[in-house]
Length: 118
Image 1 (cartoon, rainbow, N blue to C red):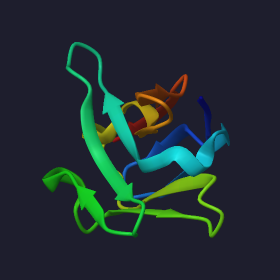
Image 2: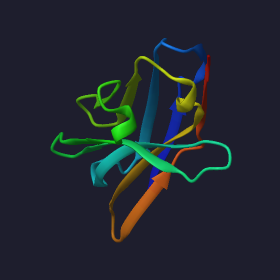
Image 3: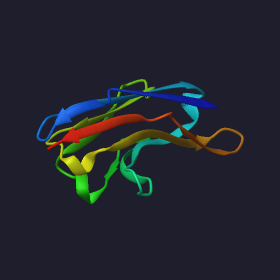
């Protein structure tokens, strides 16, 4: 029902910034929340940040004060601004959207690599 495409990953040095973009298409009106998850090698996928339909947000403790999630007015794109990046932020970052369209759904993007060198 909803397709997601991420962009904006890359290789940066510690202390630098990146902005990730997630573009949604399809039944975007059915989305209740969107978020960013990440998965480092050998680790489980974890929530980084999430934004809900009414605008409230939720962050992992490890990124609070450094990362900001926000979206465009149409609600079709969600961004993750990442400042003061650390080597431990290195991971594949995935966009996620949850909602209801006849049934509950959870959609995922293909992921974008973020690598932070020390």
